[in-house]
Amino acid sequence: MHVVSLLLADSRFPGGAHIHSGGLEEAVARKLVTAERDLPGFLHGRLWTAGSPAACFAAASAHAAARSVHKGYWSRLDAELDARTPSFAQREASRAQGRGTARAGRVAWRSPVIADLLAVTARPHHPVITGALAGVAGGTPRDAALAVAYLAISGPASAAVRLLGFDPLTVNGMVAALGPELEAVADAAAAVAGVDPAELPGTGAPALDLLAEAHLRQHKEEVRLFAS
Image 1 (cartoon, one colour):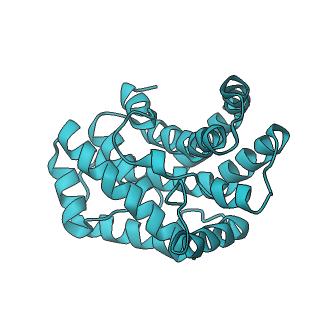
Image 2 (cartoon, helix red, strand yellow):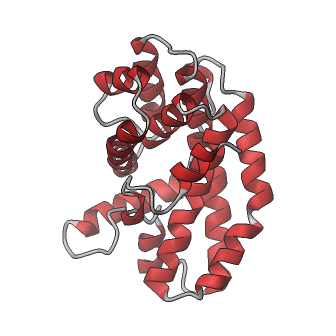
């Protein structure tokens, strides 16, 4: 694993991921997650729905960044992920995290490739900018995919501790138990890194979409701990 994967997946990376719960806050509000026994299922589901396609797009982005593709590719890749994200709230959350990651990443890894990407879209989707940063830093598509897949579950896991007071050691064990599945998601994503953006997988997550939309509505009416 390249060190860039560790940096991008680190909770201390100033990309803004700490203010997003990946749908967990709304699940808690609706009492879909109330006890520690409920969390592994939520994390598993999020990894294989939202996390899997995000990993694929991160891998594709890393593959492209290492090859200094034309600006038009970034526009297509970003648009294809947009098309696979039917929820407005989910799109906004992804772009908010993408903007934060871009601000931090362009300082850490200065590259004309990143400049080209941000010239096309100033608010890229999080998997797209994360993958591009991994690629210009020397990471492989699999490195990028693994970082994004991990972030898909580490965010909700951390949110569970803050929202429900779950034992952090137990929650960390739940994340560790998903290690083989994280590896599987990263392997699958790396296998399609070089395909045309239109051919990238787009696993749906209707439940997460609905939770995201509900959270956005509620967030406008009352104070919430997380932005999504």
